[in-house]
Length: 137
Image 1 (tube, rainbow, N blue to C red):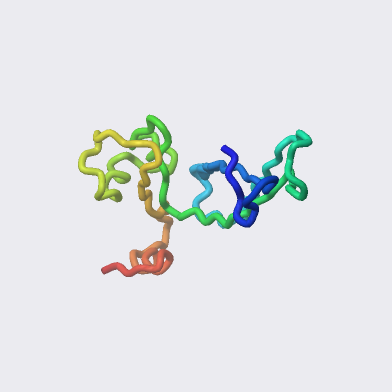
Image 2 (cartoon, rainbow, N blue to C red; image 1 turned 90 degrees about the vertical axis):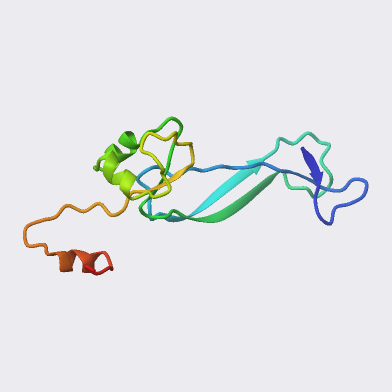
């Protein structure tokens, strides 16, 4: 829809269009910090008010949380767990908001998947805890 822009009231004023843009980060983009820029352009018809630019750009800063995954349509715990190299029981235990493992999940629902770390020879509980900024208690 065309809407009058602020400061452009009256006959021959400028107009703007509203559009919603939705961006869903990929499953492996946790921790991403980036500037996302969107450009919109309307074809010139010759009927535009004087001084109205046919093109505009808007940039926004995006920060994607680490260790959190937004479910896609029709995904189940087993599928998400496989993405992160874990099992559904581990994923279920990290998400207390899930009341039952077979409960219907919905698109956009956020799941915590925690830190993925494989223990190697020489690891101790203390140095693993220190690595992730926590304690063994």
